[in-house]
Image (cartoon, rainbow, N blue to C red; front, side, top):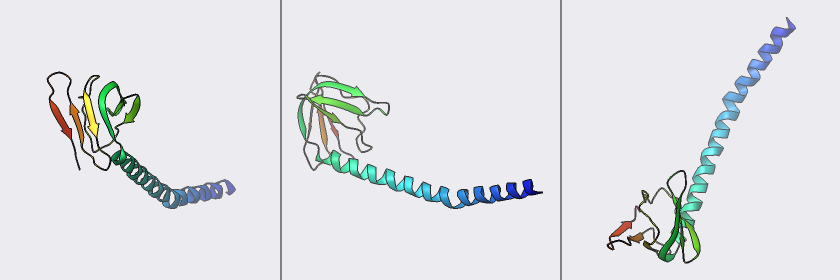
Length: 117
């Protein structure tokens, strides 16, 4: 009989965890992702660069890490969709305080504007 009481106590504890701790953890997780996204967005809008792309590497999410004038710039944001269009030799420029990124292709000079804001 004591074994069954132990199991009932265990079930009650698990129910409390699921009922209270899980939702609180979920809320904390959502707030964390929101704040980290907002933090990156502030950093991304402050970026300023112009020059020829010396190196470009795409991460697993297809976000580029570009090297311009020896400086690396990670352009991993939901408001730019580069779709692997950046290649070595292209010219890129972005002003601080703006979301607009201008890409000028090295072959033919085609201008592509990225600005989703």
